[in-house]
Image (tube, rainbow, N blue to C red; front, side, top):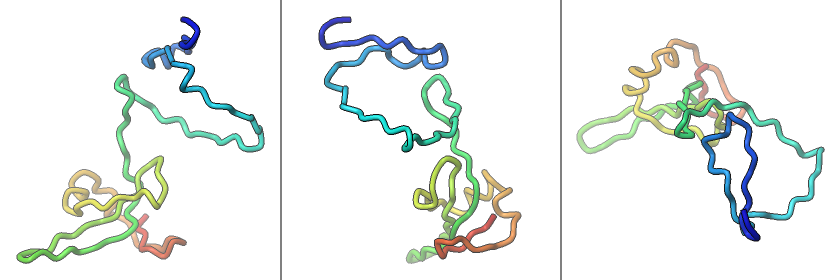
Length: 116
């Protein structure tokens, strides 16, 4: 495009990405083939987003308020690590993902309760 802007030739499956970038975005890279990481294929829609899928319940917790108790579950999501698991309201998760609550309890190496 010019002295400070480049246009990328993208494959058809990436046609929704803007093909121009500024040279200030470039960084020096020294390639090391021993440090190549396999990235799992994640199917993106036209808005560059994807549907999260729950994989397992990692932990349970009851939070006490003044007048009631709310049950939470820590949910492990697909394409995320155990450290990225999120706390969700158990009743909501039972409605959306009933398959998570039909299994038996086992243990994870991290020391947390794990329901597979």
